[in-house]
Each structure stands twice: as C-alpha cells, then as structure tokens.
Image (cartoon, rainbow, N blue to C red):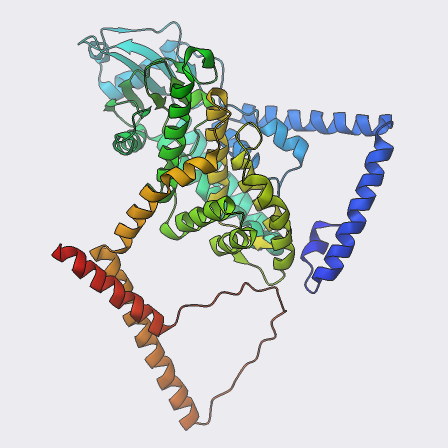
Length: 511
C-alpha cells in the first residue's frame, strides 16, 4: 500500500485491516519466491551499494551532514532499512591535520605566548580527529594532565552556511508537500539538530554544558564528567579522562558488580537528565564513554546536548512507565500528546501497532532489545498512521540508542526498565517537589485566573451576539475515532488545582 493511501481521509480501520492482511500475504509470497531468486539478491546488493554511497557522501560533505545522517538513522519512517544500517556507521572521523594548521587558532584564542599555557603538548599524535576539531594530550605548567580541544580554522562559517542552505531547502520542500510536512515538519526537525549542535561551534557553550553536567553527576559514584580548566570559543582545555573508550575496554578487567554498577549509574544519570534536569548528552556513543577499573565512567564530548520542555519530559516518562506496566494504550495516548494527530490520522491502527509491540519490550535485556530503537519503531508507526511527533524525539531516540550501545559493551545483561523502577522514587519525589513549589503554585493560579477571565469574556460576547441577533452556530463533522480524545481542562478544575497547590505549598512552608 502506498504512503499516501495510508493517510487518505476516510480510509477506515476495517479497510486498513483488510489491506494490511492482503499486503502481509503478498509479502510472505514474495519472500518465498525470493529465496532462490538471483534477481532479488542483485536488488539487495544494489540497495546496499546505494546506501554505502550515501553514507560516504555525507561523510565527505562535512560535520553538519554527518549529524543529519546520524539523526536520519533513527527515522525508519523516512529512510529504508538498508539505509538505516549504513547511516548507523556514520562517525565524525577524518584524517589528522598537521598541528601547524591549529597554531593560529591557539595564538588567536590564548595569545601570542600560548606556549606558556602548557609544559608539554603532544603535537605528533592527536588523541582524536573530527571535522570540527582536533584533540591533543597536554601537561599544564603545574603538572596536571589535560586534554586540549582546538576548533578547525574557518569551520564555523562553513557549518553555518550549510545550515542556512539546508533550512531553505527544507522550507521549500515543506511548501511543495504540505501534507507530508504536516506530519514530519522537516524545518522543525532541522531546528532541533541546529540547537543541539550550537555548543560544538562555541566551546564556551560546551564548557557551560560540562559544568552543569558535572554538578548533576556529583551524586553518582560511578559516573563523572571531565573538569573544565579553561575555555574560549575555539579552544577548550579539560581534565584527562582515565582509561579508554568503552568500545575498546575489556569487560573481563572489571568485576561483575563493578560492570553492573557502572551500567546502572550511567542509565540512572541519563534518566535524570531526561526527566528532571531536561538537559542530556545527545551523543553518548561508545567512543564518548571512558572507563577504567576502579574509576567512575567519564562522559566526554558535551558539544551536542539536547534540551526538552517539561510537558515532553513528563510524557516521555509516562511512556517508559506504561512500557514497564505493559500498557500499550497508555503509550499511545502519551505519544499522541507529545505531538498531535492530523485530521487523517489512524489512531485505532496506531493503538493496534503498539498492542503488538509493547509486550515485546517489557522483559527484554540489552542483549535482546535496543530500547532506543523502540522509540524509533513507535515513531515509524506514528508517522505511517498520520500522527505528527515532536521532532525532539529523534534526538532522544539517538541518545537512548547510543547510551544503550555503550552500556551493552560492558554489561549487556542489564535491563533498562529495571533501572527505571529503581530511579522512580527519586524522579517522582523531585517532580512532586517541583509541583509544590512556590513558582508552580503561582503559575497554576495565574492559569486558572486567565481561564476564568477568558470564560467571562466569551460569555459576554455570546450575550452581545444574542442581543444583536448575530449569533450563529457552526457544526463541524468530525470523523469518528480519528481525533484524540483529549479536551482542555475546565476552569473549575484549574481553580481546584491552583487552590490545592497553593495550600500544599503553604503547608510545606510551615514545616
């Protein structure tokens, strides 16, 4: 069935089920024929070659297009499976440039006598190379081991020009395909990527992210963030993370308990970022997690950070809890509230999709399931059913998937939902404290007052219209089962919530 047919208004759930069953039978028949069909093997090879060519082209185009490709690898609703497999191999690695290319940047940022800032800097073998920056190991004048991250000359202007070009292309595509854009909102999705990448173009912002992340990690025994020692827009000096990347680490060097403790703390730390701080490492792949026996795991490279608002964070938490409770209907409701259903959305079909998916998630360990991929699977179903999803979900899915990939190297037997249960008390206590805060009480009260005022104004308008004999009633026909069953809270309910929050806050202040 075509993409457009699935979204056609009036395409009922019964028709959908019939067509889907027919499509499934045809697919089984085709797969049986393909077993001994050389032509199908050739087609698969051509698809893999095309995907490889796309991945290589994105890498050659530079860092911005690499990030876009990484995000697309979490969007099975946009690209085929063969392309996703290849895009997941994207990594921002380039050949090392000579140190002489970076000396002008050091001189411009640290002054002409920049060499006095270091006792030694290893200019022959950089620790890491990327299209945005190159990283070197150094020793500071007081003997402290450090890492120096230096931005490539002129790269910021190149990336910003690429951003502007792609944004114009996205807006043009949105105007040419409004129905397609109503579900995907390409411009908004690019905006999310741009915002997450800003600190990679200004190391002062990255340093600010690291300091905030370090404070959030202070309560964890097995998670840490390197210390910022100095930062300018193009040069970042930080403490050296011990050990090696988790990709290169040997799990046998750690005790079983230490592996599990590191995995649990990493998951718990990231969960608090998603649900409490609402700021999280958007790229915690295995190369950005350093481990060493007897030391906490260090999360490095805070250039790509995601930020989400409270409603999105709370709906994401609802999704996780509903998954843990095997509640597919709750997952569907929370997902729709993160975005919205278009007039042609197939909500019953979406609920059926999740009813088949959710039971598979509940008891799976990291050996059996990529939970980040679960988010992208739900995203694929939502898009196919005409449900627009918040574009930040792509970054969240990427972060989840990368984190689980990192932990899988060290402790694949860990079950993410078990950590959710362990962290639930801390998360819910913090959310309750936030709800009972003075600021939240004032916010709720003002919303109730605004709703009351708006209701009075609307009533006055109706009375005036009746007096002038100008009142008319428009009745819009709503297609059954297509619109989500949500309605704004009444003014009375808002007032009760406001009064309750205010009273609870006053009681907490008296203690």
